[in-house]
Image 1 (cartoon, rainbow, N blue to C red):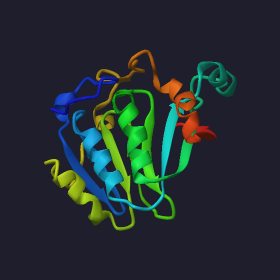
Image 2 (cartoon, rainbow, N blue to C red):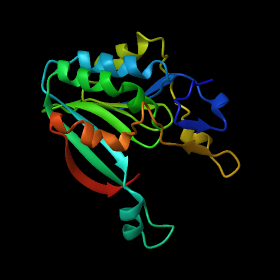
Image 3 (cartoon, rainbow, N blue to C red):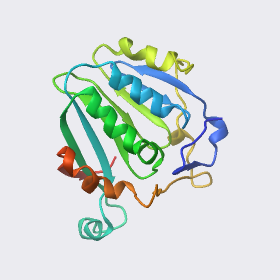
Length: 199
């Protein structure tokens, strides 16, 4: 059974296990909560080119109420970036906020490399997505943590139904939530990039 992060609950978590699947230029993986930090850290350490950090937060309720005319309209997320990081700076950001970033159930975050078609993202429900043109180069990240490759990954989204839902919640670490991070990271030149529909 997959060990879930603090902010996510899956009714049928017993159907999930640590595995990864390759889809053309993308790896999707279920990763135990206690390994997510290592997987992301390994990705950062693979690169010596300038990197970027991104953070996706659900749009605040006041603005969301103005954007959504009815319950069937999509929800929105606010996307923030920090550009031009070296690996040391990327690790500094991640290490300082890793417990909050990894375990929060409402947000998504990740790192990518400028000028290269590669990035890693921690999605909801313990999912890791990794994009790259040379995707096989990144399989060792998962293999080294004893996360096996499979032909067809069963994700939390595959288990959801009206009877068996999932739940995502905001967590608090030392009095801070992910909504504090844009202010916390102001000194690292974080900026608001866009507001878009959630997927």
